[in-house]
Image 1 (cartoon, rainbow, N blue to C red):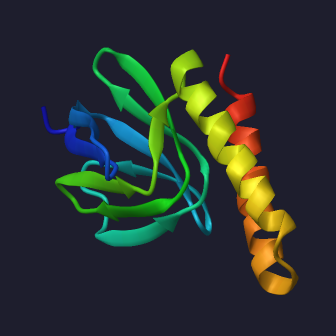
Image 2: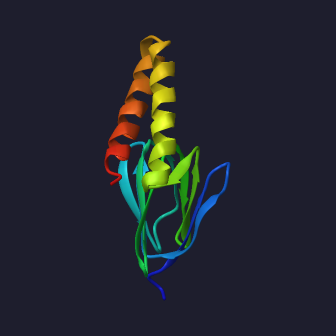
Image 3: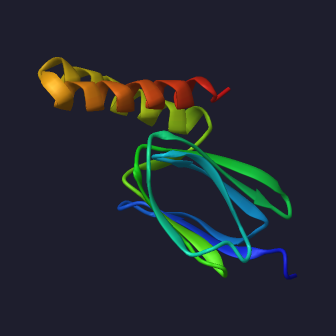
Amino acid sequence: MADLMQFDLVSPERTLASGQVRAVQIPAAEGDMTAMADHAATITSLRPGVLTSEGPDGDTRYVVTGGFAEITPQGTSVLAERAYPANAEGRAALDAILQEMRGKAATLSGPEKDTLDKAADDLARAIDTIT
């Protein structure tokens, strides 16, 4: 079908998703964006947040901690620093990452602290969406 595109979500540990989807909602660094088939070629960095793929069988949600997305007219590839399914198992791992980020931020000062605090706040908001 012409309205589908290839979607791949990978992290250093594993491939989380690969298949045909209608759209991918991405937590881009400059704001949320939606990639669809025939999208203009774009590369963007990710902020911590919820990434949603809209497939023929429904939506699938993941939480990413950062990384990059490459969007082409044929598909979207997301290279995540860390990514987990938005479920109870993923939430446990994400809670541990959040605590690690908060602990590291407490040892910093200045712009580095501000950047890490913002990333931790974004991740906390994403975790709060997991039921």
